[in-house]
Amino acid sequence: MAGGRRAAGLALGWGCCLLLCCAAASRMEVSMPAVVEVEIGDTARIECNFYIPENDSYTYINWFYIDGNNQVRLCHIIGSKVVEDNTDYKGRLSVGEDKALSISKVTVQDARTFVCQVEAGSHGAGENRSELRVYKVPETPEIVANSGGISVHSTDIPQIAQCVSRNSFPFSNITWYKNGKQLQQQEKMVKIMDTLTRESSGLYTVSSTLFARVTREDRNSLYHCTVHYWLRGHRRTMESRPVNVTVFYPAQHVKLQVMPSSMLVKEGDNVKLVCEADGNPAPVFSFYKRDLGDWQDVSSLADANSGVLYLRDVTKNSSGLYRCQTLDLDDMGQLEQDVELVVNYIEEVRVKMEPSSPLKEGDSVRLSCDANSPVALDYQWRDDKGKKVAEGNQLFLSNLTFETSRNFSCKVIAPSVPGLEQSKQVAVAVQGKPRIVAISSPLYVRQDEVVNLTCKAIAFPKPSVHWNVNGTAHEYIENQHIASNLTVRVNHDLLRAGAMCRVSNALGVSEKHIQLLDQKTPESKGVIIVAIIVCILVVAVLGSVIYFLHKKGKIPCGRAGKQDITKPEARKDKIVVEVKSDKLSEEAGLLQGANGEKRPAADQSEKYIDLRN
Image 1 (tube, rainbow, N blue to C red):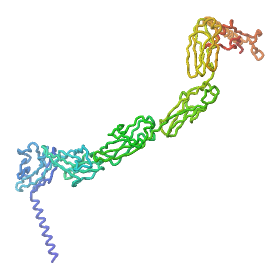
Image 2 (cartoon, one colour):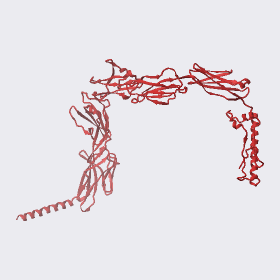
Image 3 (tube, one colour):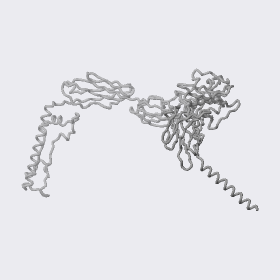
Image 4 (cartoon, rainbow, N blue to C red):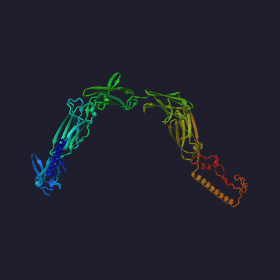
């Protein structure tokens, strides 16, 4: 029985569904999208799809928009003909082959509901509607931070920044973030004020101002705002750039340091004592130096705004304890810090010479060097040309000569303080009678010729130079050397007797003779040179003849036939060529070197040329 009732119920249900489907299939239907979104300025396309039973055609189609409680017709479509009504949309409408309505250059006023109405004769009429939503993506939000700075002691909640989003539709929302974390309204701590403005274009401008209390840690905080808007059913966001605000807070710590490092400061340096405090703005700085138990104000040497004390060309008296004191003008709090300045120096460089009595050639001497300094010192000895000759604080010189006489310097160096050094010079003077070290003798001259006679000596104390002939003398002194040049005209007596150079000081006298030799005229030298050249040519020709006769067999040459042809008493088969000078004096003048020196006597004797093969 129950099974029969269930079967009857199912049959009745299927019958109802079939009747409803048949009824729906027998009615005309119009379908449209519920919402159409388009950006301002673009073209909106609203579709209208309809079903007419039995595939009949429509009689007409009307497009309307809703204005309050009224429907305003936009256009009337019969067949393929479109008749546009006289509305504000005229000139911006078009209907496609699928009867969809297109509206170009959409504005904010186009955000309304549109109706598509279809009439199909006996099948009646049907309609449906779509909501056209227009939107405008807002511009990137602009953020402006408080430029005046914010004190942590502010009694009111200070303004942090302002954020503005322009030209959006519909209006957007703004949220605030600090270091990436969203800020919420909080009594006496965070306050956000928003302002909405509709422009003449119909677009919206949203402005939001953030007020918040700050702490010392907020000096590095970053704030930004985010604009939120809806687009095609989705929530979108757009962020501003991050900004930082200046936070004023009192100093908690102060640091005073020497620049460069106090361990490297030396006399003559320029030193800065830099005082730094961790407050903002920087406090007022004052500087003091402890002197005989009291603190002396030296702020006149400082830049109070930057906290730098300048000490120029420091000396060892600049050493001592310095203090930096800060004053915060906001809460009148004070902080202070001390630092010790050590100025490294080298002073009282002393050089001792033992023995200190006058030194003579052959003596020995010991030089000792010493100096005062708070740091370890190294010693170097250098000669008067700057060349290092020894290390250590002592220099020993033995077997002294005039050449040893010079200035030596002791260079004192502080290795731990680059650039710290001092020098002290000492003169090592070796005394003795003069010693003539150079003289222009012998000197080849001609009668009535003007010549320079030179005499150079070394001595200490300074010697005097005298000549036994009259002339113009010029003296030159370098260290212990003295040179005298005498300009004279050669006469018969000078050529015969020569000249005498006499050098003397309190310890003795030295003198030397300058020999003058008569030099022949260039014409006589030329004759001798021509004669020698002719002799050489004759010898060359004669040698060639002998070589030719030997090759022809006229002159036998063998082990038994080898003869010494250098002897004057040669036989007929030996040939001796003798070259002699006619005058010894002329030859001596000819063979003199280009620099005026005579050749050795061996070069002026008879010459024999061996012509053996």
